[in-house]
Figure 1 (cartoon, rainbow, N blue to C red):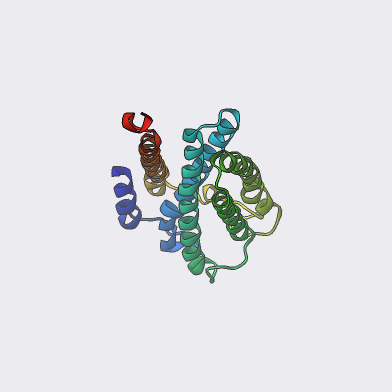
Figure 2 (spheres, rainbow, N blue to C red):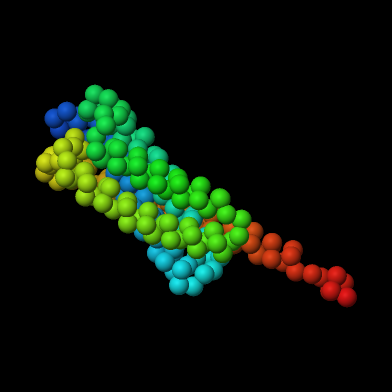
Length: 220
């Protein structure tokens, strides 16, 4: 939490370099980009546990997969919203149909479908296995959508379509001083919330199992 507090205070109050067009909006770098980093790390964790579930089905592996995806989706929504706010000032419109924006929206819809797919099954094993397989293919689709296709087309987004990334603008020490802690802070926040939700679900599962077990008097 200390890193996030530092990120918020530093991102809003520290002196920022004056870059053409970006100006004060460069401060959004400390929020928009780290949220996408957090999303990508959580999606990676999710697909790892989906693979583990297919190898060794267990409630724990399935819970890690779905809760990591849940938190990743939250970060993805926040990333799109902060990106739209940034785009409104730098591109003139919150949504310009940019390939990177469209790809991010499609990626989120794919993972929304993952959650809907899970909720369409009652049997736990069937739900876990089918959603794990879908999650693997969703992640395999996410990578080219976000990292490959936007680079093959004209894009306003930095680092895509021939536009230089922020490193080309000489990301100076004032930005780095907040940016790197922000990436760590937002990612750790996402992992922490995910672990809390997993612990809660494990406790609920344990209580449910104990409730389902017959007592000594019931077994007589």
